Image (cartoon, rainbow, N blue to C red; front, side, top):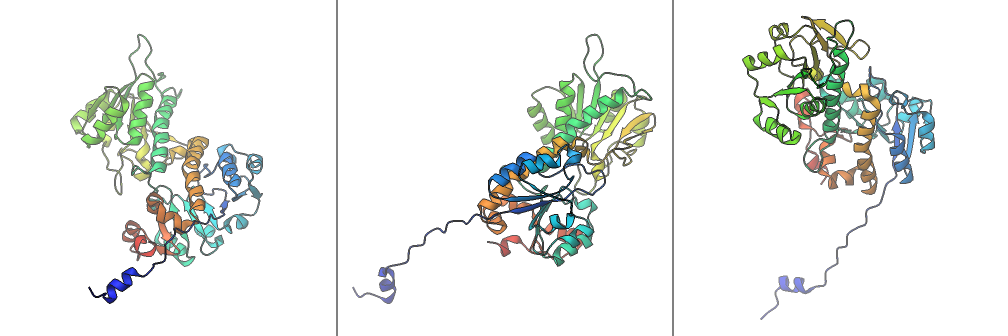
Length: 397
């Protein structure tokens, strides 16, 4: 049988393709002081800094950056961080870690091609913010977009857990308010009727609010339009509670009897108003509303944004607590939570040899990427702000 050119080629010895070992990269991380109003958290704790430094990385911290989260400069210095009074030095680091997105003035201090990891908070962003990032060719990650192996968003879930638990603790404080509160202890005391709690929303915030309220001995009723969420909440609580879809008549009846109402709804763009002012008018005098949904507009018609300094107001004889960013009130707990989420990703980025390799290997991290060397890679942001965008999978593969 004659040998064809094709079969000759098949018989030729071929080069063996060997896997190239990944080269570890050294990170130089800058942590500036948070300047946004009411922001008291920090991205890395001293223990996290110590872990990164022991892996051969550098961390530069602006003096006083951890004070509002009860971490001193000495703790960071002992952990191996470099402390500086000059914010420009911090912002000149190749990688910047912030809780709040950098302001326009801060972006000016950032060097071109820097990596920025922060929250993004789309509702408060403007088109100019993204245009400035593009101009500086910045690679940016939003930590609330980063996905876990199970498809969940660890940062969002963790902060929602804090907000849900905190909403009940805040309500418990407000119920004993000497000026207007009912002087009730949040719990189930022998011979005394338990506190009645209504939770609107069966997501993570609602689940942890329910867990905390049940732990204190309250009667809990949860309303949500998703039967799937209600069923999941029932299974997670392992405790029989009243659940219902949102029917105005049934909701009004529950609100009339409750001592505390928690707003824990979430919408795609804005939280839908579920409780009208008329419903609030029918609530008990001295009842408490904690509207956790105020970050996205609030689900009570009577809700108005308040601050940590002046967190409450009274409307229709009902105490309202409508502070956005509740986790910042518990700054140390929230900082520990964020730090626990970010530290493994930072170590992984270095182990993989840099951001490019890391996003190839980790889909969850890739999901958090919204700018790559000045190119917008998030379609939702592009559509929202009418900006050109590209698929990251066509750029990095």
